[in-house]
Length: 263
Image 1: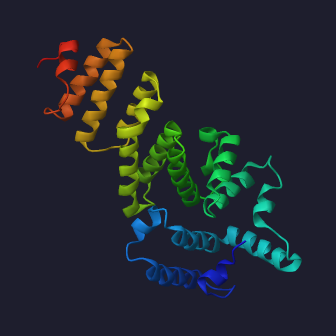
Image 2: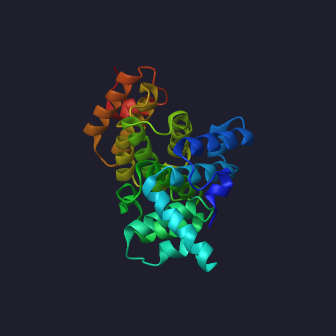
Image 3: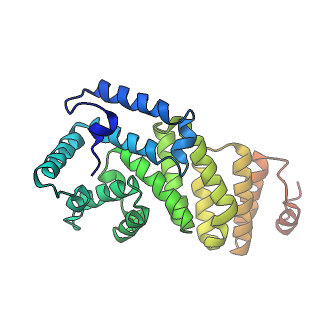
């Protein structure tokens, strides 16, 4: 269990302002481009700082953490991870354990536990603070994609972006998350899902408020899937909507002829 007070170089009775100041000072020493550092595989040090800040700046979590730290000091054997895993029937502890493992480079253990808790059906935001739930979902999505769970990664990325649209949290990091989602859709997701699921994924993307040019391409792809499903009327309506968003939409000659959308 890491001593966050020692990591930040502060006393155990440090105020929130002192905690913030310590995080900022240490972050400045790490890397001039915090966004890139945070999102890269080499961002472990920055994640440790963020984790320390999120625990110590939250009154309830700080009390729990201080209690765990005292138990560690008294017994010399207390393990916070073991403490969280003591009751597998407690979903709040399991959510915190997923979060803990993700931020301590135990990604395989975190993913295994997430799947055992229900995967996409396990609502992290019900048991974690909003910011922790968003961080957790984002990192889970990255790790799921690495392991070729493309649909699950897609769903988590879209949830994170939808929540960011509702109330910003990631701010300048969100562009990187959007790019990660677009890259996943463009290069990996299509071969991993059937036509019906693909149509649902495209509908989910259209709800996020991306630029019209992006939406036109997703609509084109949706129309192609609807053709394969035999829904020609639906495909025609979707293609016309794509052309409304981008009249110069490329790669549609065959599709237009098939659907008789020539004007």
